Picture (tube, rainbow, N blue to C red):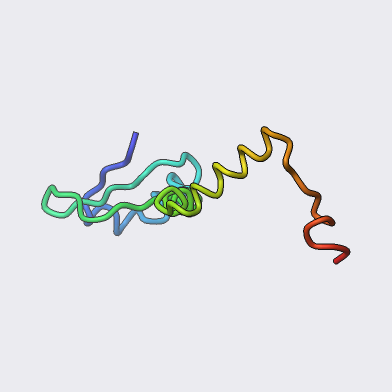
Length: 83
């Protein structure tokens, strides 16, 4: 369940709300005059959303999964040599 908080309440409870977002993985929806104005979410979730929005990255992940299923893999050393 997301947290829905008016902006006036969010100002005074920001540290507590940030802990909830980080610990429980919830979203914080901040409202103004009863309407959603902003959303806060964890950095990990933001990263996931950015990856999911990038078609090239998703295609690359799908190709990599297929390669792994079909046994087409290389070791770190085979790709990068002795570093």
